[in-house]
Length: 129
View 1 (cartoon, rainbow, N blue to C red):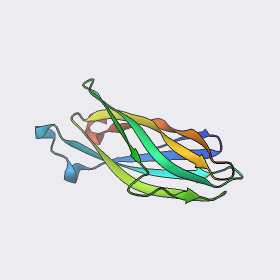
View 2: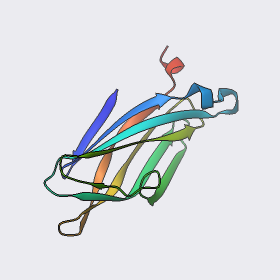
View 3: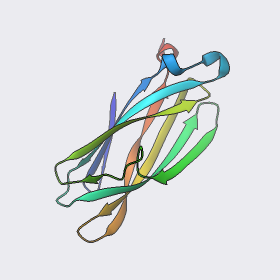
């Protein structure tokens, strides 16, 4: 399932997958991968400067992660183009969620805005049975 949102012409789509080979449920370690596609629907080039994540476990634990770029990059995305990357998140429970924002720079006027990352769910498939 793909979750999508659009902010100021920047479309962010997320797709998740449970990673059983990297998980160890007996030790409360559940690993999830997520693929993000950032598409520039605006008329101006944008650069992704920073990320800010809100991560929620189903046991009530909340974490925040902030930093420069994504997977070591601060990509410039031209109008009509996109940037895609894959990253991961570990949880202590078999269910959780993430949401956040990317700090974006509009290169034509150096204005900064936050592109929303839609809330998406991290659910181990066996939890759905």
